[in-house]
Length: 467
Image 1 (cartoon, rainbow, N blue to C red):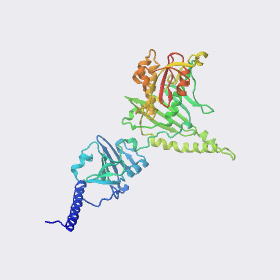
Image 2: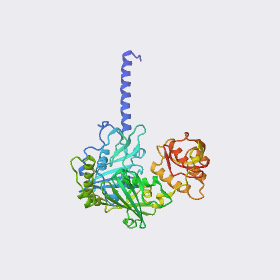
Image 3: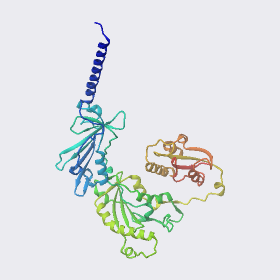
Image 4: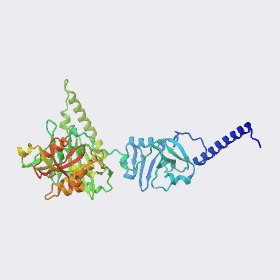
């Protein structure tokens, strides 16, 4: 048969049609069939948050249940502690998931994509009505191999999509509640009294605003970093969880009384059970004498008016604070509890012998150090937080200052950086070699002396002068 140009053209067109048809069929097999899917469409459409009575979030063995009450959502899985409305709203916003592509309608592919019902690595969010019936929900599986999205599907449906953006849901109670316990700034703390076994020590501010320790015993001086850490602990007091055993409140071993510039008094009772730390809270407003003394005259500075308003607000907020916190026992981070559970012994140290003029004027010294870095500190590969690094460094410092301590062994065990392998030895250096904070901490030491914690951009240092 002779193929003319016309016949060849016709065969070419037919081949093209067959190729396109094959591609369409093949694409349909991959995607699970053709439908009216549009990129950017919502995974869950027409969701009315007002009809949602419960939200269940599960990932493996971890789960969390939010339940709607007349006053708002509570974390039912954590003794019905009130959830923060802005964080619940953020959860609903996260549920507005947009799909970038449809992956499959084939249920047999669920396991490979991490969205199978029995997959423990998947996160399952279910929205339930007042009768406990599932309204809708989403299963979040593995990350898309190329892109920021995840494989997702609606519960009880087979179709799997790739989300346009990263989708994450947490089962941690702290992500749905307001974890800040005392909303006070460090500058507003005027006095802190710590009572342990009927012995009280007090930290206060002087007229210039400087923080100092009262009634220091003879021959002692304040550990200023420890003293100031008390005010830091209050202004950053947060909780991790709700105690399941309310008896820990009765077993409090430390009472922490804080007075603020607005004349509010916060009482924090601290207790410990096993390796966990707990607090209970109460608040007293300004006294009647303080309230009666409020009197702003024409020409008074704005600062006086501002303080008066703060005092009135403290009066109004005290009963609200007590209503919100009186029935709860909070579990707090151990590093925060350690800052708060301080006695006069912990806050003071022996006054060191004066450094001779010869030592102070030395051009060079020889020293060793132990360095504990944290995520974000210079040249550090550590993953711990700054607070965790400070806690670890504080524990090591106590060991380094103990009688007969082997500083080199501690450095080899704990110190980060190249000097750790040589027992922390830095050799001889002058005043211009190290960071100014490190230099100042070193030149204060006598030979054999160990510094308190010295902070630089590299982390927390413990320094020992060796020559």
